[in-house]
Structures are given as structure tokens and as C-alpha cells.
Length: 136
Image (cartoon, rainbow, N blue to C red; front, side):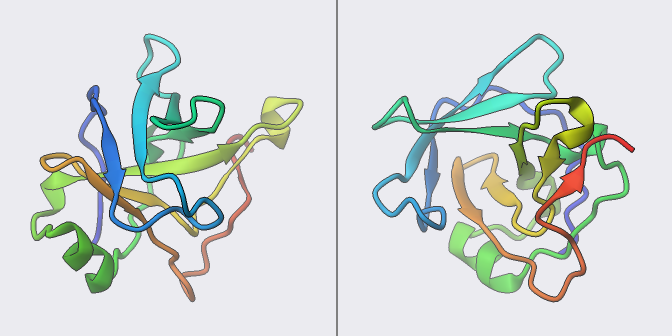
């Protein structure tokens, strides 16, 4: 299924990962917290350890042509069949300047808006990079 991810991000009380994010085996429950009123930048904050948080963005505002093919395994893990239920988030690595700030397009976080379950999937062989600049 190709994920267009054009719907706006709404407040999600708790997101639960069906499989932990790579490198964080003890963290599955996170809050999606808006950083500002624009709805373009969020903290994905661990419910169990508030010190653990990831800067995330919905792709459309930064990468309007980003429509990755989400694998059947990830969709089955979430129990999703309709693309409209999917919210994509990209993990951002903040640089000292906007030009040095990058997003991981190869491993998006896929969230089912209805169940609030999520999985981070790796798009191996997609040609996407783990470090794509937010601005040219």
C-alpha cells in the first residue's frame, strides 16, 4: 500500500508500538506532543521515560512527494487495510542549522490513527536515505 499521509496530525493520547523501535527494546508506549501551533513538528516522548524522546515530523510539509510503499508485514502487524488510517512520521536529527537537520526517509514510523498502534518499518531497497536534508 502506498501511503500518501496527507491527512493532518491530530493529538494522539498514547501510541503503542507493536514492536519496539530499533535500539529501544524496553520502550513501546509514547505520547505524540506538538512542539508548536503549526502542527509540523512533534516530540514522540516515551510514556515510561520522559527523557527519551524523538523529534518527528509528518512528511507532507517537508517532503510532499514522499509516498513510500509500506510493506504488507507492517500493515498486517497494525491490522490496517485502508491508507486513510495511516499516519506517517519521520524521525529527525536536528543539526546546528536548518541546513544540517535531516530526516530519516528510509525508516518511517507508521501509525494506525484508529488503534493508535505503530511500527517503525525499514524500506530496504527503496533508495530512500536515513539522512535527507529538510531544506535544500
